[in-house]
Amino acid sequence: MNPDRPIGIFDSGIGGLTVAKSIKNVLPNEQLIYFGDTVHMPYGDKSADAIRYYCLRISKFLLEQNCKMIVIACNSASSAAYDVLLDFFEGKVFFVNVVDPLVEEVKRKNLHNVGVIATKATIHSSIYKTKIKAINQKIKVSQLATPLLAPMIEEGFYTGNIANSVIENYLNNPELEGIEALLLACTHYPLIKKDIEAFYHHKILVLDSTDVVSKTVKDILEKENLLAQKPMDQDIFYVSDYTTSFEESARMFYGNSIHLEAKTL
Ligand code: DGL
Image (tube, rainbow, N blue to C red; front, top):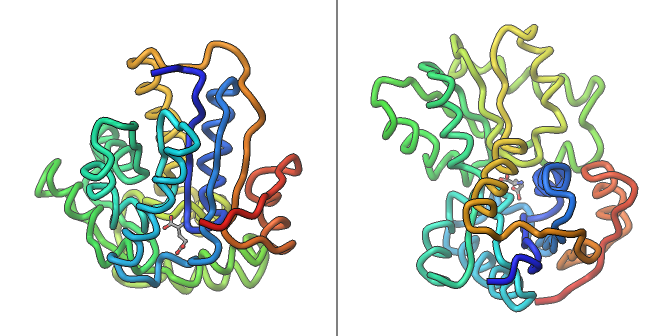
């Protein structure tokens, strides 16, 4: 496989840009081809079958773009579709999901009592609980669906009173009492990480998937001798439905340099 090929990254919308940004920071030579499925977002409220169907189509598109690796930068998609994508595209491309690197952190940090907040799709799949219990059955895993957070962040409410009162409302849930760490199991949530840490007065560990996922991407490409050796072409950011409001939100997630292009699959 040619190391000059791009890395594909996709999400239901623009939340996955938090992961794309981290990958770009760690691997500046790589060309990224991002696909945000804004026609179908939020994935968090969809059935697993619908999410799988969207993911198969997007992955097929990213393969047509010659991607050497596809990063599923969405927890809802990772929990519903990762296994299906591995089977369907076996041997054709490397897939990285956003769940396993975060679960690996629970093991690495030797945590025993963790909370997980995410969309309904991710929580109903119980993927974090299952994978963490597989490390050690004794680890306590408390899960809470927090469906208002992703749309709230996308609308630009990621600091201030409104954000803080929604965050407080969710995190005061008795389900999360006594946790030593909270996993932000949605790629939108890094934008409210500071508010969440402040809610807990910095007394518990708050973990998100951005840096652990980009490290995983780097490790795999390094191991497979697939790291781009010189700066590649410009990154491309596709969305299945383009609006100026998505463009504005994308800047908030990625930075001012971003420009979205419409792409119907
Ligand atoms: N970014 C998605 C995730 O990580 C959540 C947004 C959505 O529901 O589409 O699950």
